[in-house]
Amino acid sequence: MTHTALIAGASGLIGRSLCQQLQAEPAFSQLTALVRRPAGLAAGKLAEMQIDYAQLARTTLPQVDIVFCCLGSTIKQAGSQAAFRQVDCDYVLALAQAARAAGARHFLVVSALGADANSPVFYNRVKGEMEAALQALDYPRLTIARPSLLLGERAEFRLGERVAAKLGWLAPARWRPIAAEQVARALLRLALAPGQGVQVLESAQLRTLAAS
Image: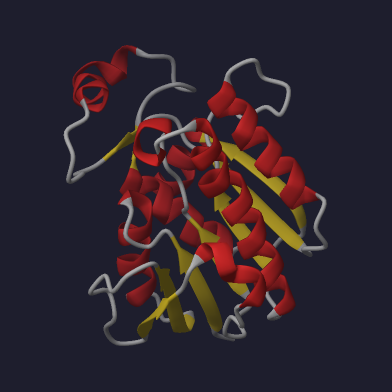
C-alpha cells in the first residue's frame, strides 16, 4: 500500500528535510507541498500547491491520507503575539479541518517541548492550545512531536541556536537540542508505523526513534 501526503511548512527547517526524505521513500506515491509562494520544491512525485492559509476554509485540498504539519514561527518573525497565534494555532487548526474534509486520516504536527495550554509562557500556551484543539477533531490518528531547540542551516542568524549547537550536549536529554533532520526522520517513521489515537513524543523520544 502506498500513501499520499500533504506537507505544510515545507520551506522550513523540518519541512525541507521531510520533503527530501519523503521523495526517497517508496511508500509514498504522491506528495503535495503547500506553499505561500513558489519555493522550487516540485520534483518527481512532489508537487507544489500555492495557497493562502487565511483562506483555507474556502480551499479544496487534494485527497490524501497523511498530513505533515511543520508550520511554525516566532513572535519576532510574526511581528506580534496575535500574528504568532494566527500562524502557530489558527492556521494549523484550519489545515487540519480542511485536510480531514479531504479524507486525511493521520495528522502529524510539530509542536514544541513545554507545550501546555495552562502555561504562563505565551509561546508554550499557544502550542498547548493548538494541541488541545487538534485533539478535539475527529482524526483517527493524531501524532504530536515536541522537539526542543532545533538545529540546522537557517537563512537568518540565530545566536541562541549557535550557542546551543556548541553547548547543547551539556543539557539533560529531554532539553538537548535536536537536528531538524532527526525530527523529519522520526515523523516519517511514525507515519509508516501502525497506530491509532493520539501519540505525543518529546525530543528525546524523537531522537531515539530517528536513530533506530
